[in-house]
Amino acid sequence: MEPTCPAATESAWVALGADAALLDRVAYGGPSGGLPARLPVMELARATVAVCALAAAELGAVRTGRPVPRVRVDDGAVATAFRSDRLVRLDGRPWEGFAPLSRFWRAADGWVRTHANYPHHRARLLAALGLPGGAGPDAVAAAIAERPAVAVEDAVYAAGGLAVAVRGPAAWAAHEQGALVARQPLLTLERLGDAPARVPGARALPGRVRGEAPSPCAGVRVLDLTRVLAGPVATRTLALLGADVLRVDAPQLPETPEAHNDTGMGKRSTALDLGRGADRRAFEELLADADVVVTGYRPGALDRFGLSPEALDERRPGLVVAQLSAWGRYGPWGGRRGFDSLVQAATGIALLEGSAEEPGALPVQALDHGTGYLLAAAVLRALTEQHGAGGTRLARLALTQTAHWLTHGLAKGPEGGGPYDPERWLTERDSPMGRLRYARSPVSYEGGPADWTRPPAPLGTDRAEWLGP
Image: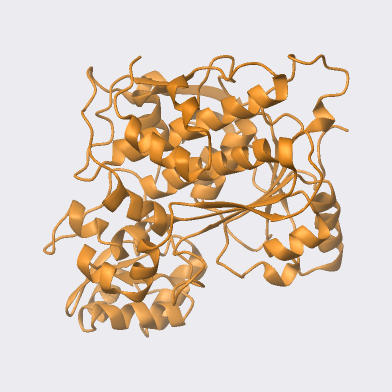
C-alpha cells in the first residue's frame, strides 16, 4: 500500500493537535471508486478513517510502551463503511430509505429539504404547514409550492420540525450562520479543567505486564448519548477498540431499526428517563464511573440534567467530554436540530452535487460518517493527552464544519485502481434479532481488532450498569 492523498489526512491530524511525525505510519491502497461525487468525498472518507486509526494506534502505543504500529487504510473498506447504514441487513431485509416526507420539495422560489423519518418530526412538519396528521406527499408538495423556501424553513423550525431552504455556496457564505462556520476550525479539542494524570482505562490493566495491555480502549467506560448517525458511528468505533460503551436513550424516543442494527455493534443499550428520579439516580451512578461522555443532541438540550461540559467537569473531573452538533454551538442556528441531509441542503452541497433545476446529494451520508470518525479520533487523542497531562478534556465537532472542510479545504485526488465491490468488506453473524449482515470497520492497524466482540441487542434492553470491575 502506498500513500496516495496524504494532504487531507495531515490537515485533520493537525486539527487534532497530534504529532505530524506519526503520519509516516499511514499507508493507503485499494479501489477508491466506491464514493463517486463531484466533491472530494473519497478524500474526506479516507482522511477521517486514517486519523481515527492512527489515533487508536497512538493510544495503544501509549498504553503498551511500544512503537506506534503502522496504519492501513483500504479505500474499499472505507467506501463500504461509509455505506454501512444502507448495506446492513437483518434476515435479508434491505434498507428502506428515507420516509416519504423526507425529501426535496419545490417551493415558490426554489427548493426545500425536509426530514421526517421520525413520527414526531413528521407531525411537526405537517402542523407547520397547516395540514392534517394523515396528509401525504401530494398535500405537502402543494403546501410548500405556494410559499417561499425560507418561509417554510422558519415555520417548520418554529414548530419544532426539520426543514431548510436549499442554498447555493454563495448564499450560505452570506448567511450569518454560514459566515460563522467559515471562521471555525474543523474541530476543537481543549483542556477544560484540571485533574490528575492517569492511565486511560487503568481498571483493565491490573495483573498485566507492561507491553501486554489489551485494546487501546479496554477498561474505558463511555456513556453514549447520541442518535443518528455521526455520534453512534463514533461510539461504535470506540467499542471496536475495546471500550465498554453504554448507549442511553429516553424510552419515548423512537429509533430506526437499520440505524440501530448498523451502529449498535459492540455496544450495550439501556433506556433511562432522566426526568424521573429513579432513572436519574441510575444515570448518576453510571456517570460516577464513566471515563467518556459523548453527546449528540441539540445544543443545550441536556444542560438541565447537569450535562453541560462545565457541570460535568465540576462533578467528574478528568472526564473526556465530546459534543456533536449539526450547525455548531454558536450563531443564530446554534440551538437547532439537524441531520446530514439538511446540512447538505443548507451549505450548498445539494446544488454542487445537482443543480438549481434539481438538487442532488452526496453518494452517502458522508458528513455523518466522516464526522463520526473524527469524533472518535478526538476522544482517542484526548485519552492520549490525559495519559501524560491529566485534565478534563472537551472535544466539539459539527456537521457544518465538516461540510466546510469538504467544500473548501479538500482537493479531489486520483482514483485508485481495481473494481469496487462492497461484498468483500461485508460479513455476517447471528444477533438476538436475527442474522445480521454488516460492514466491517475500516479502522485498521497492525495488531488491531478485526471485528466487534458483540452484535447489537434490541434497543434499550441492557441493564444500566458497567461491565467488569
